[in-house]
Length: 491
Image (cartoon, rainbow, N blue to C red):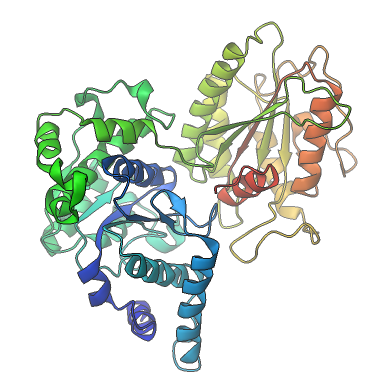
């Protein structure tokens, strides 16, 4: 029924029919797992480096930025609004009939397909939202290439509770005769992918390990050891697209396609690929933002360093902890602050469909193994969610979920989790809205994100020589709202 409804939506929206889209746009379809939409960005940077004039489209997570990207930039707001209302009016015209208006993600996918066609892009990079088999992006009947990143446990209520079950749903993007690539997976998950690939006759291969290419890991634009895995898949997807469709694009990109494909066959990364991998950035994922909090009459000082990662699965939370340990120590050493240890604060929230125990346990275990802890942990509701946009005028009144997160956090505290609470020269203002009996060292619930950021600003300004390191994680909504309030949102 869901597939039938989706076909109705596509037919209703006129210019977005499956056949029309497939005939005019060549696409790369990517099956991510939480943090792995990075490889879409690697592909995006590769497109940019191949040719400044090569039009390409990127559709990834809407939690940080609602607009599709064209040639690295979000589509202009007037153009976005024009396409938006065209799709909305077309669908609304038939909304009184079954199945009504599409849900948010399906609508945004229809809108993105409309943008693809109108902007005449040469290549579209599609990131799946949930699963694959029944996902809204799985409407392209014959993409150029498909990719599946490292599998893990996410959206288990929809995809299944075992890795093979999840793998079969993810493999739903495989198409007959369309090349597909994946990376090293647990044996049972890989067998499930091969099983589905065999049924639909899709040639599935493992991407070559990134270590085989001649690019030092530290030269990747995105931090974290797992990015080497994503980079290997991004390279393979880009090379496959270039070999199949690159020559048809014309211009300088097409002229060098054959040579680049030959280089890759010899495990040599072409210059355009190297520049793409090095220039890849992704807001809210392994992102470091230094906030100086400059205000009238206040010294700049050392400010606050925000470490933002929208991890929201057990695997990605452990990866986030590893990244934060490395990044926090690197930032401290680079700033020459070894004599004054930073005051570290965790800012955490996760959505109610998540299991906080499953998220915080690997996160805290990884931190403890590295001997790093937080002096304070703050649990704060985001302003935005999948049901609404953020509003400063209506902060949430029910904080019971955040209190539950606090209790889970307390169960995983170790002696290293709150070591060195007292910092020389650090004078902390009182936490806003703190309920009786709460202690920030054991975790505290704060009423709003704006109040929390204002408190951090006062902390930095009252002790300008004391460095603050704040890790924001657990939810892309939380990360997106923090970036917005810091005026660091993607543009």
